Length: 266
Image (cartoon, rainbow, N blue to C red; front, side, top):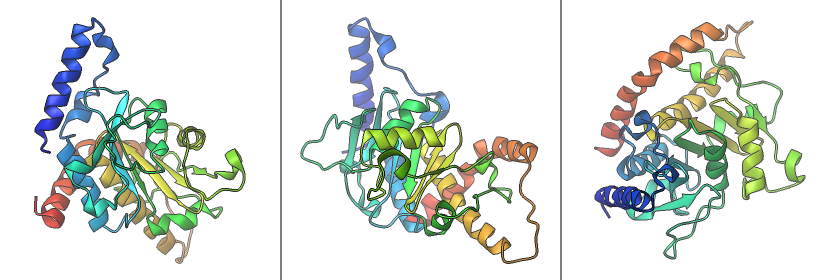
C-alpha cells in the first residue's frame, strides 16, 4: 500500500458525500492539520517515537482522518517500531474498526476515539509509557513547564486515576467508559497523565504530537533534576507559555524533520 491509497480513499469519501447530497456529513480537518498528515507521516511518527525510546512494544500514535473528522487512523496491535503502511487501520470515533481485514486492534484505542470526540481541535494523539512521567502520576508533585520548549504543559497537566471510574483495574484504558473519563480529565489541556501507566499528548498533527510527547518526557527529567537543587523552582508564567506556544506552532517542524532524517533516513 502506498500513500496513493489515502488519496483514493479521500476521493471516494468526497464523491460519496456529494452524490448523497450530504456533503456536510464529511467534516474535513483544518488546513493546518492536513499539512503533512498522511499515512507515511503516521508510520514515521510510530518509528520516531520508538527510536526516541518513548514507546517500546507498546504505545501508539494516531491521526484524525484528513477527510472524515468522524474517523481516525491507527496501526493495528503491533510494536510501533514495526509499523508499516499495511498496518494502518481506520476507526470510527466509537473505536470500531472500519476495515479490520483480520487485523487485531489495540486494546487502548479508546484513548484516541474519546479524545477525538471531545476535542474537535485535536488531530493527532500520542499515548506512551515514557518512564520519567510515571512518578508524577503517582505523587503529589505536578508536572509543570520550566523551559523554552515546555509552554504546552501550561496551564496544567492533570492526572487521571481509573479507580475513580471503575475501582480496581489493570490501569489500561480499555473501553469507552474509561476513554471518556480520560478525555474529561484532559479537558482543554495538552497532556494528561494516567496513574501508574503513562500519558496522552494531543496536537494539531502527528509531527507536532511526537514533538510534544518527547518534550513531555524531557520536561519531567528536568523537573526531577531541578528538585534536587536549592529552590524555589522558577516555572513558566502564563504569558511566557503563550509566547512559547505561538512560536512552536511552526518551530516544531525543524525538530520533526531532523528526527525523520537522522533516525529514519527519510
